[in-house]
Image (cartoon, rainbow, N blue to C red; front, side, top):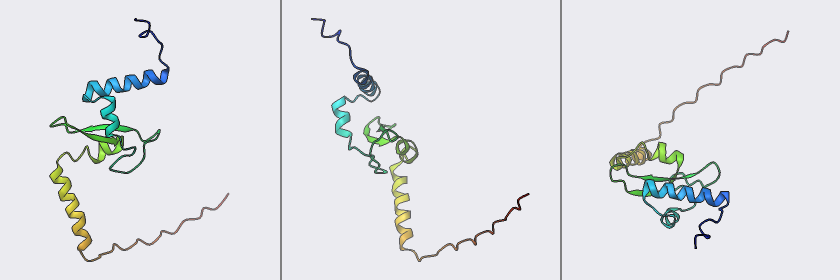
Length: 120
């Protein structure tokens, strides 16, 4: 019967249904596939999901292949800027090679003297 379809959903259930309908429409993954990608934290910065750290679907723009879930910051600024995996490898190699170099330390700047204002 159609009575089952007329059942009112709670606001939380409606929000969840809308979220996964949008994800399916944009990325083509179901709720179960989304949950299989979810590790409970961002694999780049290792922060757990919370109210302020929200998971986003990360995908390759050239192949449209879904790679996983990242936090918004990592998706936009860390992974989003480096779409060329060869560049990321070169950055990694540069940082690892820098550890093998002699330690040249940047000298600390002397602290500035604070001016004391006279009270009127």
